[in-house]
Length: 122
Image (cartoon, rainbow, N blue to C red; front, top):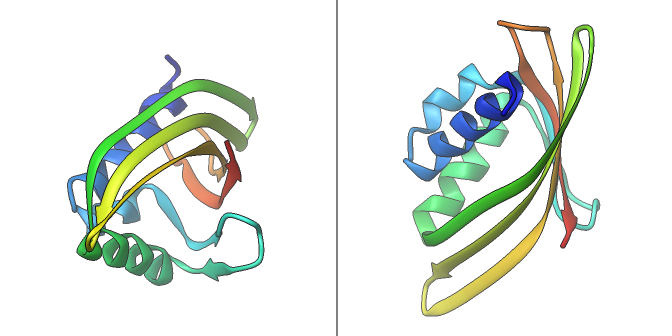
């Protein structure tokens, strides 16, 4: 695994463990999160943390698995792609989904921050 794979895994643990404020160590102040389908998007660290917090306030995650990491690094810019599969419960509904996450990072080694997050259908 690369340092960036470890970085992304640590970021995912933050929201899974409900350590939402720790996401600030991984997300840029002006991060853009694009919802599946590309129609809705949010911008900014506060909005990103709020989206993770709201999801976890209404959901119980039973399984979250990642695999197939591909890291492309060019100086102070990097792209991390990976497959994910998740099972969760929201209210009385059980849900399963899978897809591919695409993260664009900026900053360079030791200072990486996610500036763009997009999920593609599985």
